[in-house]
Image 1 (cartoon, rainbow, N blue to C red):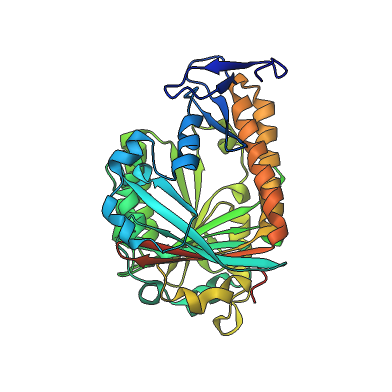
Image 2 (image 1 turned 90 degrees about the vertical axis):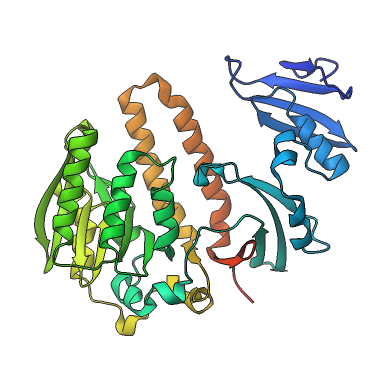
Length: 400
């Protein structure tokens, strides 16, 4: 770079005299820049709007201390006592996008085992989890397994309390606060919320193109009146924020249901009835699906035998004392999301929007990540409270 063999890299002045070079990727001052430097025989780089941001990476490598002024000011020095001796892999996470308040926490991770076909370990952090009971107290896994069977390719379950905290946070939009009020009033006491992704035979359609189905659900207090409560929330969203939602009641097999429409969006308005999102009431569960056709298939399928569920239930025993549990079939999820990315990319190209280039690049990056992790086959995560912070246990691939 000093000899000009790599065009585009310019010298950046540094207070400590380091030879830092920067490559402008965008045209605006706020666009991303790649800054690079050499320390201890290692070439390091940093992508940031700061043309000399790599100096923080260099300082971290040379001093093993948080040198970014904002991090140094906001980190709690007392948290050092909670770190596991001998663990060298550490980091920081800015949690303010969730809490709405300044919140930076320390993190560290270790591997408990690593083999040819899998790995496992844990990540610990010093910032507290939102208040919420363990899954043992908030969800009946037999009921959930009977409801979902082997449908999910990816599955997450967590107590409703932290979700409620996010929806009612000071930085949440007013529209989402109305959604939170509906969920809060409809939830059946101490409760849990699940979200899952379904592909393969349970995929949906958008304008005839195959896409994965997203499902979300929770137990409800009054199954007979919950659809009336949804209509009330839809009316509020339309009156106060002009969302343009439409709610049409129907029966899917023997289950009361409601299909949602959106007349303000041309693409959404062109969807067929089977391609639109739908709520279904299944005994004392309310399930929202992104595709009414898939919801009808699920309403007519045979319940899981004895509530055994599918492969997603393999880590249930370890999850009972956890705050949240997630399971992902990485191969099936790769296939499902690849379809979704292809359809979304096609819609961006057809729209002719000149500003869609950055979105398409982000989708390409996401596709690259999906391609990289599919070989690990499966992933399981257990999130637990460990005062004053949290512990996230993870397993990839085959487990010994």
